[in-house]
Length: 169
Image (tube, rainbow, N blue to C red; front, side, top):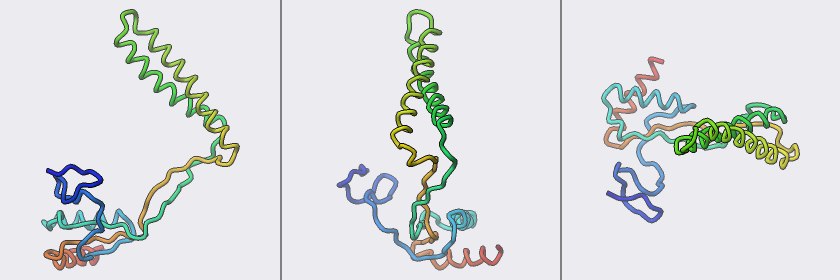
């Protein structure tokens, strides 16, 4: 068994290279979306193809930032208060479990202090942006296309199976 460290060579316990390496294999299909590539590999698996020989490779990677909404003071403070309240409730419950007195006081105290802390920290972070980023977003790493590669010993069979799938679609 090999432990994955920055200096490890060889393979780890699952047989996968411990170091980042370029993918190998022959292309047996190319798809515009990850969902299509996943569907192709699922088709191979359903038809007893040795899918352990298959790799899905995202080609031409790009970072996509999807804007989810506009930030306002109300949204920022509400989200900060909610986040702080959850954390405060968690801490309060832990303190309540180990408290010799009543469990209600630590829970309420944790909730109140957490809410205040969440409000203050969210307001401080938002004020520090000075209006330069008044929107919320989610960032994803996506590929321009997704190639399905297979080990050479089964590539020809895989290509035929995916061609059959394409004809049916």
